[in-house]
Length: 511
Image (cartoon, rainbow, N blue to C red; front, side, top):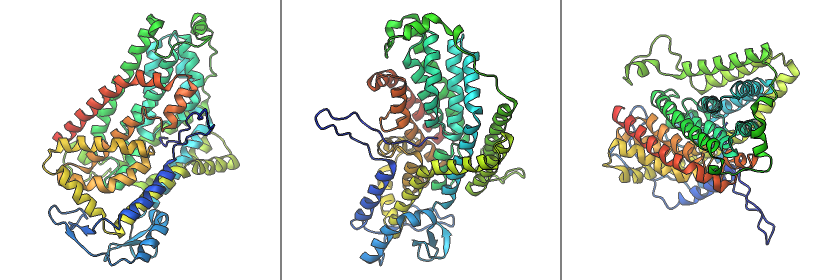
């Protein structure tokens, strides 16, 4: 699941102190206070809204908030609470926990994150996914290029549908020795794992932690824009696999071209060859059943959220087909809770073990869930201070007059530094989308394209920034220098950036 942990830098030789990059929770807490203070300086204003609640171009005007200092201090104090279950009063537009109106907080997304956390934890507790990947690696052990492509494809598929990222840290112990035995180097293994999962997250189709949270914050369906994102996934995954395979082939032909070099014993493993690698146990019937169930659950999730009439006809206003479910976060949360129980029953966990796994899964995912709540609390402060539309109006002036394609590329570019500061995908989405999504209305592009541009920026940065546990933890486990990893990956990053911008231009042109 693509949620990043803080980076720990090497200790300073003189002081012995470590620099610890702030966690996403700390960053968002600081952002909350900063936004609250800046709201005193930003003049309040608002747009007129259409029946769908979207801002009407050219209607921005200044307003008075009527808030006292005590009111604003109360908003700061209650921001996490409002971020979870704040209610927006339909008459005044204010958000508070004791008002009457529509839910403004992120309670639905919060519960969904905990539910999918429970599901993922139960699946991993069965050992089926680990065993399946280990069997794949062993079957392809004598066909190096196919092995690299197969593992990267599986990781990328898991990344695009469920944000598979930090879970890859457990595979270095399997993939690194196998790559060395095939005559490759440690950088090949590192690229296979980090880039395989990372490109899937970058091209998220229905990844709940990226596309899901961003779509919710942008007020669009999780399935909106899935055709463009699926095309991106196919092309960018193929390019990334080709890049790693090409590097691996060069190293195998000439070990002197290795960017990571070889540690003592590495070349001896290659001389021993892959034939001596121990064969993993065959998949049991239970493990096969669990893997089939996991595939069916994610396939059904995709079916349930895709607006099929719009996707198949190209008309966003097309009436829904009778078989469309139109599910959103409440239904998906229930789906993954039920699926967690089904997996536990199929795996014969028993009531005690299943209950413990579900609770542990929810506990493990409480951090990203809280990040979403804190980020939503920031938007509540801006809403109650009436400065959200003022910021939107200022940004509108910057992008006004640009073409829809240029606008989509600008969304990608402006999110790059934000992704560095807030490596949590869900926190970044919840914080940025309330400003970025309405801009799409002014630029004449779909909000789904803004979601795609945003997640591309977040995913692109997380392929290399040292603020993610996936990257810094991966190079550490593989015993590869971070500077050498940057030398390895930067040409691919440049190519991916060009391709992303091309897809965004295409999406704007056909949208």
